[in-house]
Amino acid sequence: IEVWLQTFSPGARTPIHRHSCEEVFIVLQGSGTLLLAPNSHMKYPGEPENLPIFPNSTFHVPVNDVHQ
Image 1 (cartoon, rainbow, N blue to C red):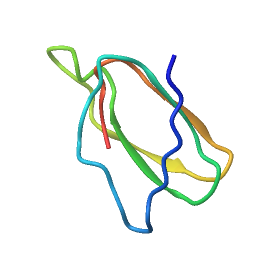
Image 2 (cartoon, rainbow, N blue to C red):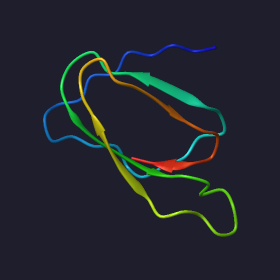
Image 3 (spheres, rainbow, N blue to C red):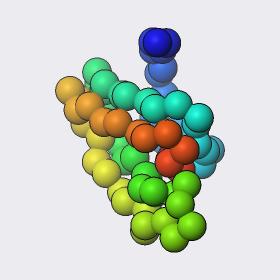
Image 4 (cartoon, helix red, strand yellow):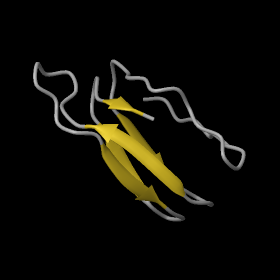
């Protein structure tokens, strides 16, 4: 298991990417939007979802699902 603390500046974003492992995020402060393409590792992926992020929210990104 790995644990990371990341800080983003207002308006910052990551590139669209995927990982070969699961990710779990716990938001301590701030707000934003998670772009998540569920099942994007499959032949016919679902439409990307825009999920709100706010303090004390927790979210999970499955293995190989595209997100930003």
